[in-house]
Length: 218
Image 1 (tube, rainbow, N blue to C red):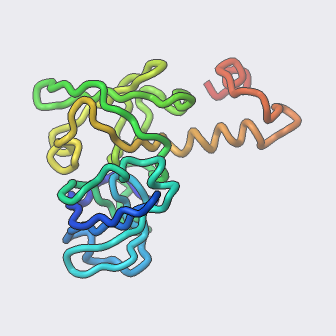
Image 2: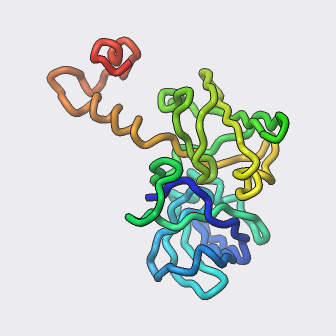
């Protein structure tokens, strides 16, 4: 579990490509001060396990499923990545609850400079629109952000200067691809409504706006 508050920008120093998976080596410093073998670390928002490390780098395996559904398949030596260590009981929850399990890879539609801020617009994957609400939370390449607005097929966020300077979003442009994790709370609410009480809702039914209004959720 993570918070979406990036602690360090790392750099890929080694990539071993297999048929449908990867082993990656990433240079870092701050993130490695209190880690142990087997700890979880978020790389561009993807929860990975540290398989080896020293004072300035660590390695991790990217499984076939992670390779398939994230943008880690596209990284190469020299790529910059967002890094966050796992949440502890003594760590401030400054962002929101992030699982490190990516829902989809999204293409950046627009990057607009507005004074000292930057607004990004992203594609919404088919079937994922229901998890996005205005002023809700989303993790983009592991960065906890607030959804400004959302339509049927895109959503946008506003990036403050501090976030831009301390994450790899600073290096992203329209046409680039990012990992997206929607707010985990919405997924659990949907699952509960769909399967929690089979006497009230058939599991084959779609979760609709009328159903949510009827039961007092909106």
